[in-house]
Length: 331
Ligand SMILES: Nc1ncnc2c1ncn2[C@@H]1O[C@H](COP(=O)(O)OP(=O)(O)OP(=O)(O)O)[C@@H](O)[C@H]1O
Image (cartoon, rainbow, N blue to C red):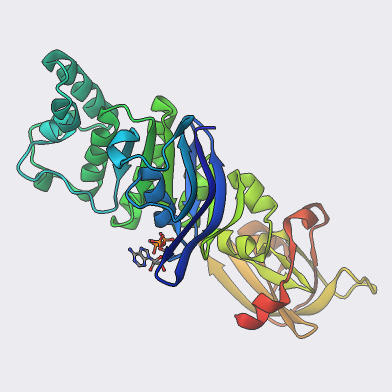
């Protein structure tokens, strides 16, 4: 294990930002800290970096007790959402900066910077100033700069958060490929579940200062530990007293025999969302959402008013959670 967080708590005045958090972050993997705004993700990342100190608990980085070490002695690279580049220095010099202050030999600096600029595909921009780069290029420069000093751990706080959706998507794919090449232990903060599911090897879901679940994207998506994780990771609908993903609901035309697992109702709404069709079925005082592919939808010839039966697909029962009544009342 590369980063061990044990029983870390942090308050700001009376506000509990982290409440007895323990987590092991594996070496060489890409781990996402995922959760809603204000949940404590950035605070945890800043505590790993040493930019914030925990009130209690322990932080270990690669076997070294880092709890009381200043940031510069933790050997971590850090990239923020709004990257503070040296505006008057070229891209090349920005990337070289950490090596220059460490007084590395000139030849070593030159080859390392060239290697890094190639890695982040910025070779042709080496002589530009940061202001002459696009937002996405600037974040890639920030990553090259953070990697220059060969950190044990790379910490990214919403690195693509300020960019538009298309560039964000490109950069997350690029980050995945970059990580596959360099394998440096990386922890990144995001509130975007799609980003975490697409990029991360491991996801730590944080909410209200506590860890809700830790697991691979598949584990979290298919076996959410609770209501919160299930709702946060993707669309849900309620069928009876279970929460289920809308694409895990089966639908059949016509009335059936009495079957306690089924709900009979009528189609009350049909919406097309890209290649998916969202069908709302109302029955038993419940509105159940079902998503179908276009072909499935056309094969059934569903219309508003059609009588149908819906049930949870038998093979996905593990991927549902019982509805937490307290949470239901609160929403
Ligand atoms: N220096 C501070 N002083 C007071 N309160 C703070 C401070 N830093 C963070 N907080 C509070 O602690 C809580 C957790 O903040 P944190 O930035 O860790 O959340 P987050 O999950 O990263 O959210 P976001 O995605 O919005 O950045 C928030 O309610 C925030 O207002």
